[in-house]
Amino acid sequence: MSYIEFSSKPPVPEFEDRGTHMANYSRVYASTKEDVMPVTDRDAALRRYLDTYERTGAKRVILKGRDLTTSQGFKVSNEDVAGFCRAHGDRYVGLAGVDPYQGIKAVRDLEHAVRDLGMRGLNLPCFELKLAINDARMYPLYAKCIELDIPVVLHSGVNFSTTSPIRNSHPQLLDEVMVHFPELTVVVSPPGWPWIQELIAVAWRHRSVYIGLAAVRPKYLGVAGSGYESLLQYGGNVLKNQILFGSAFPLMTVEQALADIDALPLADDVRRKWLHDNAVRAFQLDT
Image (cartoon, rainbow, N blue to C red; front, top):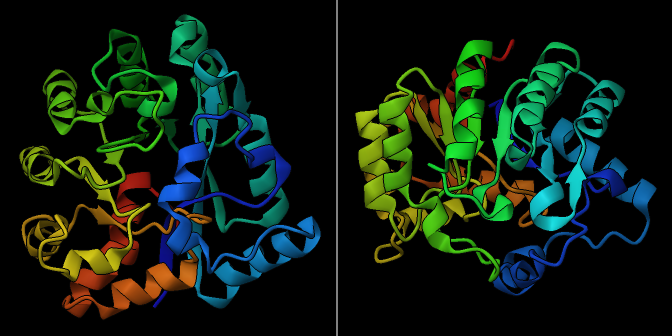
């Protein structure tokens, strides 16, 4: 079955983290990253990366810009993301990153990224930006997303960067945003732990809220007591049109994430929605 990868980071210098805020992630994800080959030869790592998505049948792979200039002192530029997509074909799709602290410039940067660079959405990683989902500085960007008819990707749930409060990504803040911007399409990931029930409620209330499974082993949706099991229950029925697949490579291998999805007790039509159809709708992809 072909699939769409919602969250991936190529092993090239332009996409590297250049701040210290992600250091704790190496400890938290040590067990899942063991299967990811270390980058000792950049050319070989890139070949493996591209081959993985060819071999596993990825229809589209979504890559994210991140403008953390004010909060972390670096960015993954929209130009570099767009350049990677151009260089490696239609399989790769870019999302823009802008810096909300820069006010109207951020709004203009977003419009340029979409209209001139071909970006298909906006990525606002709240914990890296050190801003809450409902921070007023985000609102002009939400309005611009509606105008441009693109989705916004937001972080939801715990983060393991000890420099940013986890309350900034609470699903109740997203509910407030959706009340103010009912036409906004939002993809939230990771899937809200430890507030998964609250995130389910928000997605159930607002049909244009999608939940991305990135950065969590999908197998935990089938493990009693993991905290994720409600996603399997609701994702198989009332939210079956609102769940997206993502490996968050290199936090885990693509093959591992796909195998986990395949092992879940999902109806075939629901599995296809999770792996493919929902992302097509959320990002308005041509397939």
